[in-house]
Length: 317
Image (cartoon, rainbow, N blue to C red):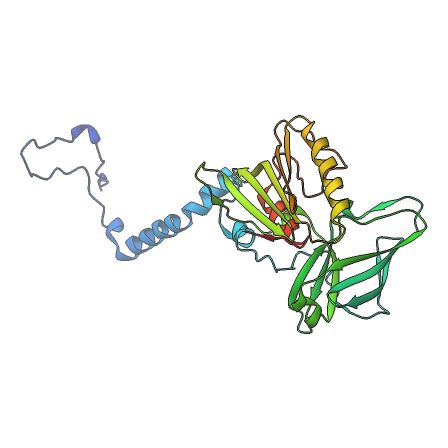
């Protein structure tokens, strides 16, 4: 019995029909390959391969080194409220009383709290072997209502206590704070904790922040949120207490400032008062430790000036 020869597929014998819209046969499925079950399985395999293709590609390429540019990490920073305290190092609330004692660091104790009128005072004791500067740790005293609503924040950068010494410090408070204060906290803050701000621009396209307190108005100018100029104006009337000493003291200070590079200080004695107008070009002026703490260095961030000046009792906008 002669064996039936299986037909072979010969690609060399394919002839392309050159007529338009005609069908060219390049091969055909055998009867077994036309089985519906076979076609179903083949389609299923193709769908599974397509579904898992991205995973396979990522596995072959390995983990991506591209940083995450999503907004999730920035929204908390940009929307941070100045009254938020979620990043405070110390979350402990203390009930305000004359017997309250708070330990800072290892050998620094704050106690003997007292509120007389709108003036808050307390004693700081340094049990250490060296002089302690509060500004090195960026400490703030925060005052709260009974419901733990922040009323006012006081910066403690001016506190310096010699070793084995106790000193009493006083700070004026807003009348509302003095009336409603029930709890306090002493916290350390990093610059990253300070809320961002948006500044208004003047006609010279300079970003400006103006801070006022009592007889003083300070104007800070920024470029791209970096400080480059300070104008400090003091205005005293002759009817203030100890006017004669103030007059002589500010006259001498103005003359000393005016002799320094990058600083212009004008003193005007009007008879019934005096004005001191000091302008500092931070790009050329060299600040020294004896200068006011409110004279910030060149390129200090705007949010630092705003946050800290508010905590010094100035009204800034």
